[in-house]
Length: 154
Image (cartoon, rainbow, N blue to C red; front, side, top):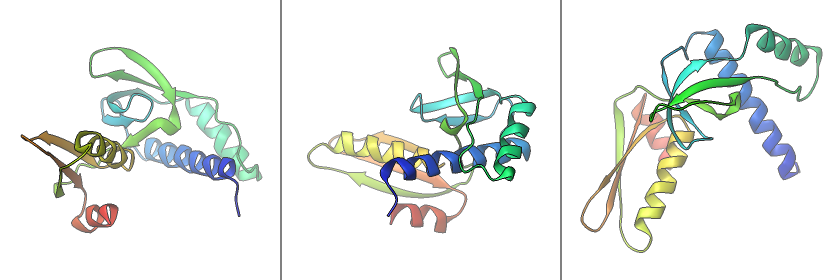
């Protein structure tokens, strides 16, 4: 059984590779709105790490290094106008789909629970919207397919 530290390292490595290939395939470009796990909010993507840094990482990976270090941050602008940088693994491409599911949270700690579910959905790449009602919160999650949204929820 893998140690927790090894599982986290494996997850971070897969996130780095996923974002690298999204950048190389032009699925994430300058000006795109992406989710930043460092900020816990959507940000505007400005600049990826240099092409040389990406190529060195991929070459080291190809040589057989298990978890080569990635030395490069992305640059972004927060929605309130501040320019910042974060490790590449902190960026998540947001779904543009219109398929959705709605969930209503009531009872004890419904605001906290709905906020935590919203963060999880955004970290998984879904668009999420919280609507405060009188004594509950409605959470809408949007994805590229209804199956994708339903699979995330279950």
